[in-house]
Image 1 (tube, rainbow, N blue to C red):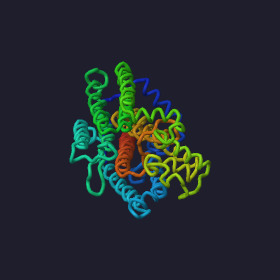
Image 2 (cartoon, helix red, strand yellow; image 1 turned 60 degrees about the vertical axis):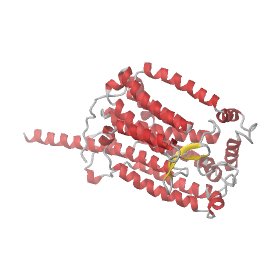
Image 3 (cartoon, rainbow, N blue to C red; image 1 turned 90 degrees about the horizontal axis):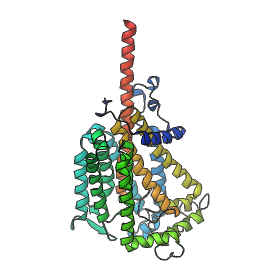
Image 4 (tube, helix red, strand yellow; image 1 turned 90 degrees about the vertical axis):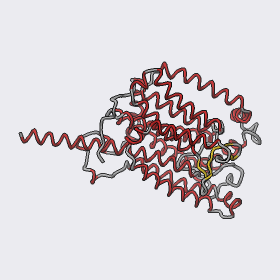
Length: 432
């Protein structure tokens, strides 16, 4: 697959954001280096047939997280599977099926050239809006626990917001590749309006957690793309103010905030999940109670196999294992940022922004989930990417991983093409 190295608009993020990214990837260099191609040296580029077609470090991190996820879901879901379906293996069997489907979907996504994504920016916005609006239509969307987030499709229910995350990252990256869209108020306003519309539809479901993750990731991509701070600072102020209002006008959200500051005082009310999660951490100690020996999964800790699977990890495998999982997530995110950094250096702006967006989406959601589990953040219903039970989350996350692998592949393919051209040029010069 030949790749055009020039990205339509030669653009590198403004000095502040690029320096921040430079510091991050330089500090993490021993962690996230793993592909000889990203060294950008001609001698390191091998013929296509002699090197692995995908980035092995990224793939290794994903495989580790998927394997740990299957183990945790098998244990954490056994009791609820037995009670609800009469089979302790029912939910883990579904989870394994979705792991297989997500890998297959990821393989298909890997085949899509990034140029096609880049040309489909506004089409992806339209698709995002259609999916999010359809969820809210009675008779199409399905209400679960007071939220309209799913569209029944027989075998499973589609949660459109999971896939909208990637589609909108593609739009933002594509749109902000054009310098005028970043540097002029009108151009920035169009991108912001599209994002605010998506966030508003998420809030109507309501899904504040996804809205926060989505907006934070998109805002990070805007910053790294070179949008002037004079445009971004008012957005920050307005966002914080809006978040405060959303918390104050919803009693259940305010209750969670109050319980967050003193969970044991509200341990039978808004602080119940947090206190049970902390009990799981206390029971696990450094090395855990052993796989399958969790007490909290026996209906003490709600959503043990989804939102609070990290607490079950600590209880059964110990704090040391939880730290290892955290480090694997760090390596995955830093690797994505390293790929983005190389793309920016080569003036492949769209590739770099896409990699940054994926790093932020996965990193922010993982950070929030772990923060909730350890009591560092108020309780919010977000899954832990690649570990928690949930078909939609698995499918969407594997699509993101596949796109990241495609970014790295096109960087390598571009480096290989340039190296071959340089070699032919030297041979011609030597012959003459």
